[in-house]
Length: 324
Image 1: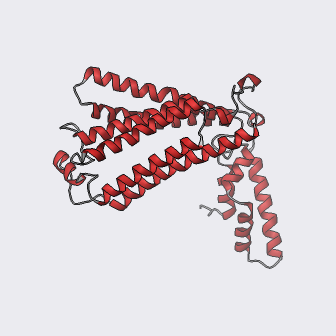
Image 2: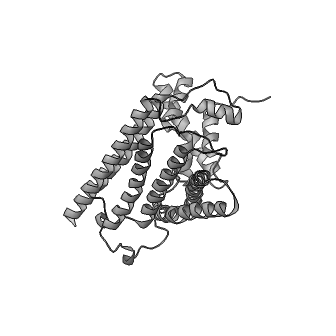
Image 3: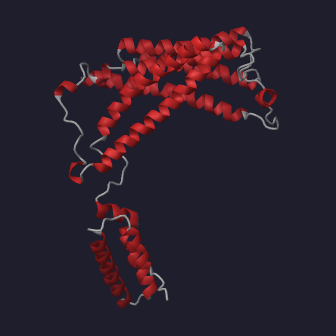
């Protein structure tokens, strides 16, 4: 005959199932005693036994949280001890790996295939995005494993001892990292190349998203605005920080690009009939349409984010200069 488990049984099992044999039984006995005492007190006060048991268990809280407390397991993925090293590595690795991946892929494809440059740039750009995701994921997983394997007494301690020679040679408001500059410049120039390729016609190997019949003036204007973004990233690095002038140029270029694209989008001159293009190229269904409001929202959101970020960086640079 099988005895039906009680609410207390289920709660205790949930808490202790991940605990070791050295602590699990003791924790189970302690929890049962705590719950029993709370139930007895509530029953003596006139509460129904079933309701009293539910209230007693509820007062103990989430069993997973309680299990972490008893087992000494962190309730976070990366703790304060390893976080500074994780941040340093995530600043260095992308700045080195992503440009190398882009250049290596693009160079190898140019040397081994006859595809047009637009297709090669797009393929290299997509590879960089994939590498960035994998890089962030695996670095984070590695640090999470380190965090979980460290003794509880060491979890708040840094992995490596800090030394004064690790301080930067410039105060923070005057420093713009070379790695950050490379990533931003490569991204802007690659985007300019992709837009130019789309406007010039992608041929048989590509997917035509932007309208190649757009007037040449607007084609040149859009490509030029993306090129200016790349040059602006280099200018910021040379100056050493974001200045109000550079931030104003960034705001102007983002606003100009957004306004121009929104105007062309409203006139149905920016995009091709993508459902028809995909239908002809891959045989996909053409019974759908691109949402113009959604495209417009993303254009405004991206431009606004980049502009606002530049303004805040310039403001922090000015504040840092005053306090340095």
